Length: 67
Image 1 (cartoon, rainbow, N blue to C red):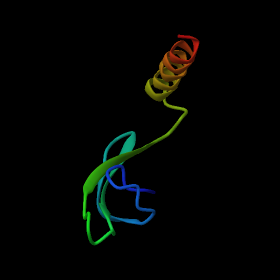
Image 2 (cartoon, rainbow, N blue to C red):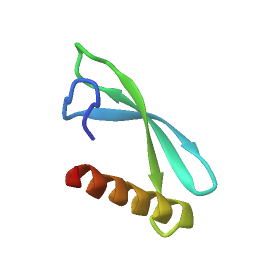
Image 3 (cartoon, rainbow, N blue to C red):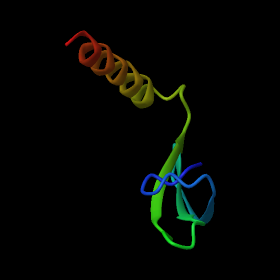
Image 4 (cartoon, rainbow, N blue to C red):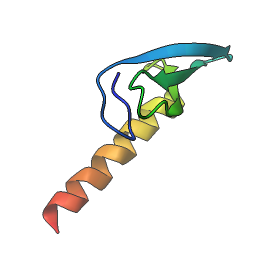
């Protein structure tokens, strides 16, 4: 996982929040000049919410490319 702030290649998980259908991971950038913390979500693609999310994201991406 790379840091979304500085694009450094190394981060570490500093905490996990387990929910019914997802795991949220609090991550910390290991770049000593950055130390940015951010949240990532791990979810099953078979869940209907995420299937719809992927479908809509793909539609938006193809609309952006056609403009």
